[in-house]
Image 1 (cartoon, rainbow, N blue to C red):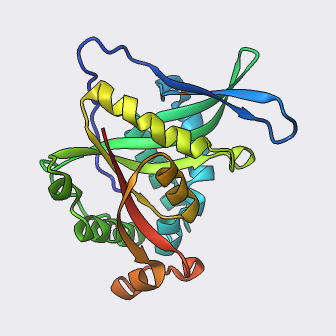
Image 2: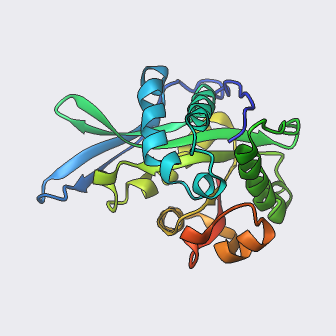
Length: 245
């Protein structure tokens, strides 16, 4: 993640913020009782908790962060925390809540922002590990030019997707990815594209109706960028998947 700043993205005329985009039920892992969930706009009252949640449940285990070594120092962790907060302040990220007898528990997040062909070039980081991270992301973006392929000048991009450990394997990530579609319609964006770095996330995206655009194994990736240590992830691939609405 870079140090760039984002701006609040406006809703289309007549669209109320915040919104609940979907509600669904999933059977409990412990019994046959159905549990209720809802996916909605991530609002400011959740920002602090959301930063803690996504760092713990996404960033610390993220393939690119691990390969680049960005979180090996406390300064790197604080930089990632600050970057997520800037993304959240754009006010287009999604939060999934477990709703139970009037209480709400954060169980999933999708940190989202808008990329445009008119964006200024990202400034290089003063941290060499973050420079490696940015180089890896740039390589994928250059390998598949999403804006040229889909003939758009902007799209929604993800800076992180995660579900809490006790809620995984229940289709919640797929529901979050599906919820991008009504969010996109509310802000006038027709395309979302993400780099999906794990097999689980890739399966969730395919189940949500996303199309696979590009794939590279981590063995191949490391040959291109030897500074990235992908050895923990050999045998799997990094993929780009997109959804157009």
